Length: 185
Image (cartoon, rainbow, N blue to C red; front, top):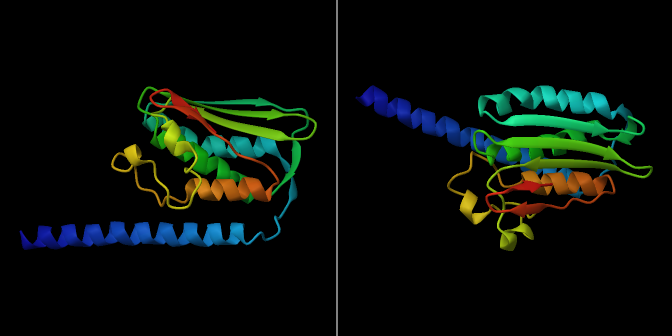
């Protein structure tokens, strides 16, 4: 019995240390992004980046019985971006979509391109975000009230990081969402 008690205490300590580590990493990342440091823009084949993201998240979606679809419409697949930052933004959005989409739902990632811009859309059939909360979701540490007790672990910094990455690429981010219908970022 004492052995189980100590094992439980050690497991809780391990989980809390992991949470602290994630929080520190995210805080450092957000601080770097907000300091407006120069992006490491390089010539990237966006199809490869999208393919890598798809490989990274397909299993997670499949394990949760969520259909993950990628749709790409490109004029020129070569773009100048910071691939690490854009990958991080994509993965944060997809991770959230998986986290808040119930089993049997779907997530669609669309990439569209015009002469001047690249448009990424991450849409899900998840639980959605109440209209009153949407204006706050990109604030650091902000968590939607109804999601706090249901959500998988997170630092509350993911969307703030995504917004900083997009701004550093001279872009904008917006969200459309309806409770129990899903969200599109």
